[in-house]
Length: 116
Image (tube, rainbow, N blue to C red; front, side):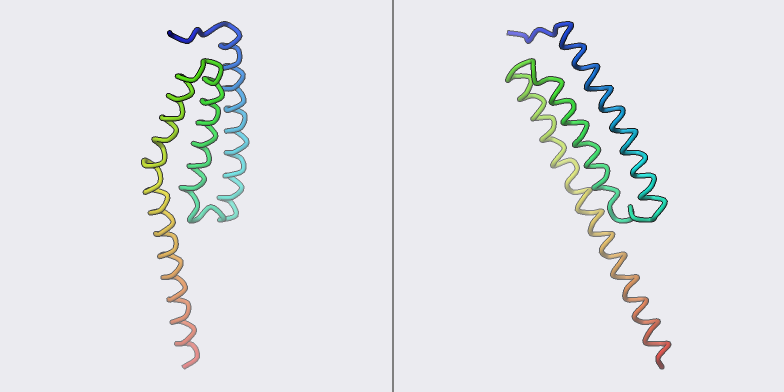
Protein backbone atom coordinates (compact mmCIF):
# COMPACT_ATOMS: atom_id res chain seq x y z
CA UNK A 1 0.00 0.00 0.00
CA UNK A 2 1.37 3.37 -1.05
CA UNK A 3 1.29 6.17 1.52
CA UNK A 4 -1.01 8.97 0.51
CA UNK A 5 0.39 12.48 0.48
CA UNK A 6 -2.39 14.88 1.33
CA UNK A 7 -2.58 18.66 1.10
CA UNK A 8 -2.06 19.05 4.87
CA UNK A 9 1.04 16.89 4.55
CA UNK A 10 2.36 19.04 1.70
CA UNK A 11 1.80 22.12 3.87
CA UNK A 12 3.66 20.42 6.71
CA UNK A 13 6.56 19.62 4.37
CA UNK A 14 6.65 23.25 3.19
CA UNK A 15 6.77 24.45 6.81
CA UNK A 16 9.55 21.97 7.66
CA UNK A 17 11.56 23.06 4.62
CA UNK A 18 11.06 26.74 5.51
CA UNK A 19 12.27 25.97 9.05
CA UNK A 20 15.29 24.17 7.60
CA UNK A 21 16.09 27.20 5.45
CA UNK A 22 15.84 29.56 8.43
CA UNK A 23 17.97 27.23 10.55
CA UNK A 24 20.55 27.07 7.75
CA UNK A 25 20.71 30.86 7.59
CA UNK A 26 21.25 31.06 11.35
CA UNK A 27 23.81 28.24 11.19
CA UNK A 28 25.68 30.04 8.39
CA UNK A 29 25.86 33.21 10.47
CA UNK A 30 27.23 31.24 13.42
CA UNK A 31 29.83 29.57 11.18
CA UNK A 32 30.79 33.00 9.80
CA UNK A 33 31.46 34.21 13.35
CA UNK A 34 33.52 31.09 14.10
CA UNK A 35 35.56 31.59 10.93
CA UNK A 36 36.15 35.28 11.68
CA UNK A 37 37.52 34.33 15.11
CA UNK A 38 39.51 31.39 13.70
CA UNK A 39 37.66 28.88 15.90
CA UNK A 40 36.57 26.67 13.01
CA UNK A 41 40.04 25.27 12.31
CA UNK A 42 40.03 21.52 12.71
CA UNK A 43 36.28 21.35 13.14
CA UNK A 44 34.92 22.00 9.64
CA UNK A 45 34.01 18.34 9.10
CA UNK A 46 32.08 18.28 12.37
CA UNK A 47 30.29 21.50 11.45
CA UNK A 48 29.32 20.00 8.08
CA UNK A 49 28.16 16.79 9.78
CA UNK A 50 26.00 18.78 12.21
CA UNK A 51 24.40 20.62 9.29
CA UNK A 52 23.74 17.32 7.51
CA UNK A 53 22.22 15.86 10.67
CA UNK A 54 19.86 18.83 10.90
CA UNK A 55 18.77 18.36 7.30
CA UNK A 56 18.27 14.64 7.84
CA UNK A 57 16.15 15.26 10.94
CA UNK A 58 14.05 17.69 8.94
CA UNK A 59 13.60 15.10 6.21
CA UNK A 60 12.66 12.44 8.74
CA UNK A 61 10.07 14.71 10.30
CA UNK A 62 8.65 15.40 6.84
CA UNK A 63 8.10 11.70 6.08
CA UNK A 64 7.09 10.65 9.60
CA UNK A 65 3.33 10.96 8.94
CA UNK A 66 3.63 8.69 5.89
CA UNK A 67 4.04 5.61 8.05
CA UNK A 68 6.60 2.99 8.96
CA UNK A 69 7.81 2.21 5.43
CA UNK A 70 8.63 5.87 4.74
CA UNK A 71 10.26 6.22 8.18
CA UNK A 72 12.36 3.13 7.57
CA UNK A 73 13.47 4.43 4.17
CA UNK A 74 14.42 7.80 5.67
CA UNK A 75 16.37 6.12 8.47
CA UNK A 76 18.23 3.94 5.96
CA UNK A 77 19.23 7.03 3.99
CA UNK A 78 20.28 8.78 7.20
CA UNK A 79 22.28 5.72 8.29
CA UNK A 80 24.11 5.83 4.96
CA UNK A 81 25.68 9.10 6.01
CA UNK A 82 27.62 7.34 8.79
CA UNK A 83 29.90 5.18 6.60
CA UNK A 84 30.05 7.96 4.01
CA UNK A 85 30.98 10.73 6.45
CA UNK A 86 32.83 9.06 9.32
CA UNK A 87 36.12 8.45 7.45
CA UNK A 88 36.14 12.10 6.33
CA UNK A 89 35.45 13.31 9.87
CA UNK A 90 38.11 11.09 11.44
CA UNK A 91 40.61 12.04 8.73
CA UNK A 92 39.93 15.72 9.29
CA UNK A 93 40.44 15.36 13.03
CA UNK A 94 43.64 13.34 12.49
CA UNK A 95 45.03 15.99 10.11
CA UNK A 96 44.17 18.76 12.58
CA UNK A 97 45.87 16.94 15.46
CA UNK A 98 48.94 16.26 13.32
CA UNK A 99 49.10 19.92 12.20
CA UNK A 100 48.81 21.14 15.79
CA UNK A 101 51.49 18.69 16.90
CA UNK A 102 53.82 19.93 14.15
CA UNK A 103 53.23 23.56 15.15
CA UNK A 104 53.82 22.69 18.81
CA UNK A 105 57.05 20.86 17.97
CA UNK A 106 58.24 23.86 15.93
CA UNK A 107 57.48 26.25 18.80
CA UNK A 108 59.36 24.04 21.25
CA UNK A 109 62.33 23.88 18.87
CA UNK A 110 62.31 27.67 18.54
CA UNK A 111 62.15 28.07 22.32
CA UNK A 112 65.10 25.72 22.80
CA UNK A 113 67.04 27.59 20.11
CA UNK A 114 66.30 30.91 21.79
CA UNK A 115 67.55 29.57 25.14
CA UNK A 116 70.93 28.56 23.69
